[in-house]
Length: 355
Image 1: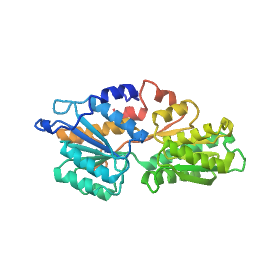
Image 2: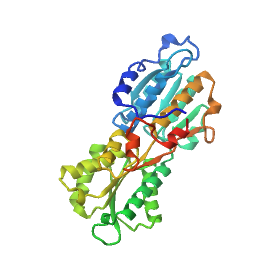
Image 3: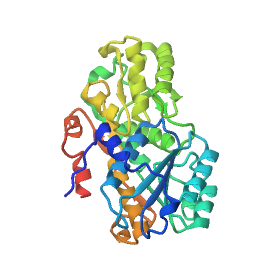
Image 4: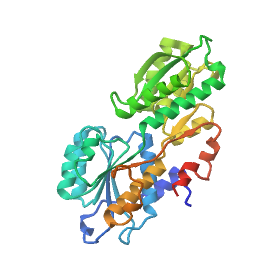
């Protein structure tokens, strides 16, 4: 059974250089060769960069049509029109599979129309299209994870920590004063993660008092700025920070460090994603916990699906839900299992069970 490993950035960047070639019109006569065009919403997203690094590394170990797959990656810089143009360029360059991380999950129609016109299948990833859009054509797929599960697990982590450590309720009022750092305004994952994290805490018997929330667009620097503002307003009253991703959780930590708050005067802070820096922050006792968004597992599903779409083999072996979805489960990360995750062994028992 193959073990998943957290790959070092140096190894990945070295192998990725072999893959970052144009899709290659000049080689279209080679039947069944895999040319993948990737466009993602913003290159500043740490989780996506790590996921795509894993995707490239896994493709480098594959052979489709007698050759290693070729990959071209484009950054849409947060603009849907740019992404639409990039899809046309990738198709024109000869890509026979598209992997699309949508800028606007509610506006994929132009991309779908282009792909259908040229008969190029699309694997949407990480930012889930509306279900009706995914049913527009039978060559559209989604690889990702259930945002609700991540919110529930974050709430469970926080509830466990609060029940085990009475010092978190510093003012001893029987309630936990909390703030939220959210991703994009109105973004599906932001709303679902926040709602389920808070609801789970309440279901676990934790009395809560919401002090504030700030939109930080999944970004560490923005989160640091927003957290400084909340600290300025609430000082040591904040007992819990719930962040929709690790980058924003790390931004909150940066704010407390910048303002020279002692360890005992800081709140407990929880993230989601399990980025490399997030895992190290747990190891260093700065981040209390996170929920691992299995980037290696999602990258594996994308690679296998892309290969199957071109070769025509292996589709029946993929664990589809409703014929279109490949969903990879989250799992919890705490100080108790962090050394295992940062070591050279497997990422998780759950990952190993996928084989």
